[in-house]
Structure formats: C-alpha cells, structure tokens
Length: 167
Image (tube, rainbow, N blue to C red; front, side):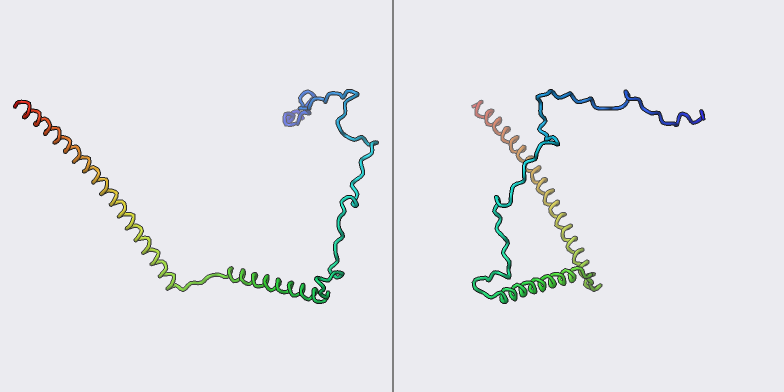
C-alpha cells in the first residue's frame, strides 16, 4: 500500500531519542550512604525508653473520693446538655435558611425610601459640585483683584516718584 505510506509512524532511531547520559562509575572507595541488602538495619527504639504512662480507666478511678456512679451520671448529663445545645443550633440554622416573605406594601415603602435617599444623595452631590464651582470663581476673582491692586500700587508709586522728583 504505497498510497497511505506517508501516514505510517516511523520508529525513531537510538540517536534521535533524548536519553540521559550514563552516570559515571564509582571508584572502589566511594560510598553513596545506602545500605546494601546484606547489612543490618539498626533496631527501632524500645517503648521502655520513652516511658509512656498507662492510660487510666475511668471506671477504676474515683474523682476526689466521689463514687463512680456519680461520675457516670455527671458525664451522661454533660453529654445530654451538649446534645440539646447542638439540637438548638441546628434549629436556629434551619430558621435562618427559611425564605423571607415581605408584604408588597412594605416592599413598595422600602423602595420609595431608597429612592428618596438616592434623590437626597444626588441633591447633596449637586450642591457639593456647586459649592466647588463657587469657590473656583471666588479664587479667580481674588487673583484678578490682586492683579488690579498690584497695578494700582505700581501706578501710585510712579505718580509719587514723578510728583516728588519734580519738586
């Protein structure tokens, strides 16, 4: 089938493959730090060296001279209290997940209030912009008057020089 021969996959030669180089040989005196199969592994530490205290049994102990029955009853009461608390928390979580329904009149009133607040904010923003414009105009007028006063001062000084120089 010479027709579809170009679609066949060619087997790569050994020269074309990306093969890592062969690692260098070890000299006789070198050691990689690995244990060989024949060497012994050190034994694990014994439990006696750590001296772990034995776990006390609650049935064997009595707390401060209290009978075991009282201890068991107290622990049962604590477990029951924990169960009650968990049950209350689950009920509160269920209550929080319930959908919230609002009457249409209250919803419309809330929307009116929100729109009123938006309108007040818009008026406040417009007032702030207007105040900024007034302050800019005031500053321009102040600079203009300052220039006029400087010009008048220069003219008066010139007139003063002319009058007192000629006298």
